[in-house]
Image 1: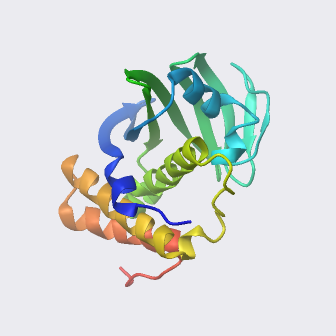
Image 2: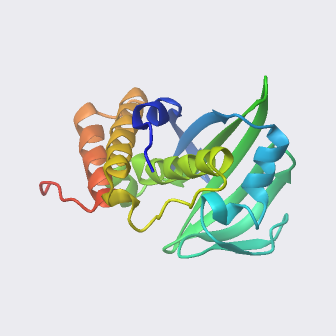
Image 3: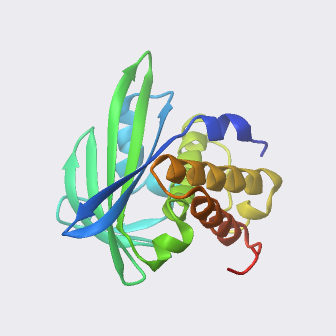
Length: 213
């Protein structure tokens, strides 16, 4: 499957914000892009147990406010907010850590709608090592999956286990990691620190190595 890597990278808006969560330093990673579909259809793709696996990961659990969900081989958590078709909020529990994810949808008119995902995490050693790309790159691959689901519904889903080894997959990961490094710089992170974290993130997702610290 050939992908227009430059267009896909350019379609995503990326921001990083500093804040406090439960009295502790935290960072909010937000990425957003628009899709050629109605907000109702986009909401269904984001929240339907039948459609989520087509663009993201298989999911199980009780997909309703107060219910718990589990993504296959990844995070689980509790659904805290559900306001169709505009707002979904949940906890993101993985590897003993808890963070928070908010999805906000809006109608852009002319047959397009917008999806913005904000992933908020406490500042930790993991954050200091990888920066915003640690979650940003993964969600960006999810946004790509959503585009392919909406525009090429009859084609096979990208293979998440091998995508990083393909020409386009590696180019997307490298471009996304670098873009998140620039977003970190724009948020006030020292440029050298931001670039080093972006390089570690890229290496993690591609399986390559970086020079030791």
